[in-house]
Image (cartoon, rainbow, N blue to C red; front, side, top):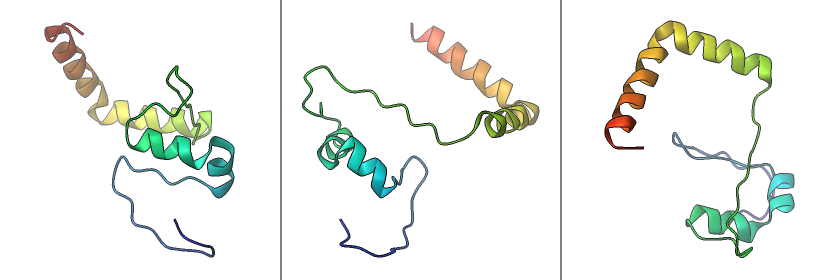
Length: 86
């Protein structure tokens, strides 16, 4: 953890960066537990929904995704999941 000021980061796909206020609200211990795949101490498991994009931007993105072959990927994954019994 950095002590203060601005620090540049390099994130890979699937990694997330949280604003300091979000870390304070959720709690560093909970975030560390989530990162390690552990229960954060509530005894019931925790689910966090973090909305990072407004609905209009998501609609534009999803429309582009579908137009560029995304529907084929969805079908392929759905077929694979059916074959695996999921």
